[in-house]
Image (cartoon, rainbow, N blue to C red; front, side, top):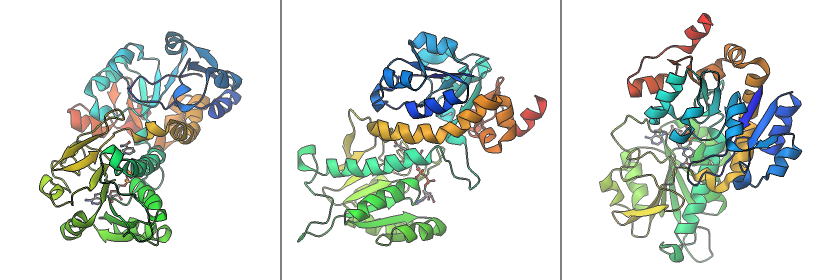
Length: 371
Ligand SMILES: NC(=O)c1ccc[n+]([C@@H]2O[C@H](COP(=O)([O-])OP(=O)(O)OC[C@H]3O[C@@H](n4cnc5c(N)ncnc54)[C@H](O)[C@@H]3O)[C@@H](O)[C@H]2O)c1
């Protein structure tokens, strides 16, 4: 198969879908890899690094034209739409539910599109989301360290255990990949760390690895107590896009003490935290109710090399299955890959997008019987 690794065009997006080490593996399987010139620069990889790994480095148009499979990180933008055609396979974070114009193009073109974010594993977890959540959680903690500094508009609090000074308090909403990644760093820096979740099983599991963290049920009483005491409130909850309620309402933000901040890593606009509006790396913070908010929606991009290494390695087995077997056989053989199928031949197979955008849905399990 001919695979095209494209340079991301989203502002401040520096990740790349394949790194030289994974290109080497793909080429060793007998496939051809085109890499758009400069695609890896933001992650620390030069065109020469890719050539040494066996890729053909080419200009943008050549990569789009020659490739059977587009291997990317982010969703497609309007200037890329013209390249999405019936015979093309798309493998990236698609987020079709949030991008109706992209969904139109995917369906009208009759291409085959598989979304990283919708591929589960046998435990119902999402293995291609997990690595980014860990980086986002850890990156969110580093953002808090940064923005608590006086020189960055914060209260001048060093988020660690300094002799003679009470340890700062941090609270994480959610005990998933993000919450545990934050807690791992925050507790090793000697902070007073609290995690609130609604799922006792995930808290019991996390407690084994994080003995110095307090785990609490996410309810109003615990939330209000933590909000009044915390220096940094992190959000790492999974919040359904259609929900209109919140965990932290605007009036709750008023309970927070002066100089405290919110780092919304999960970052759903007006989602679990009512006052959240996603921001960018170039303009990452704003104040609401006197409380600094950091709500960057692509934190991992700031750690592009680490993120690219972990993402490229996580997607490689699936990419190889598609390339080695052909996309239809790979989807037939692997129920988890099939769950990530967004669309095929003009049929929308991702239920979430069908519901959200009021479009007809086709069950991928039934669809493959018609092939
Ligand atoms: N900003 C970024 O750059 C970035 C990067 C990666 C992921 N994310 C987003 O972050 C979110 C969380 O990711 P994750 O991998 O940690 O998810 P996860 O599924 O591992 O964890 C979410 C946790 O939230 C808990 N939760 C649900 N409702 C709750 C409530 N009312 N109170 C407290 N906890 C509650 C769940 O029980 C679960 O343990 C996702 O929406 C993801 O898309 C953002």
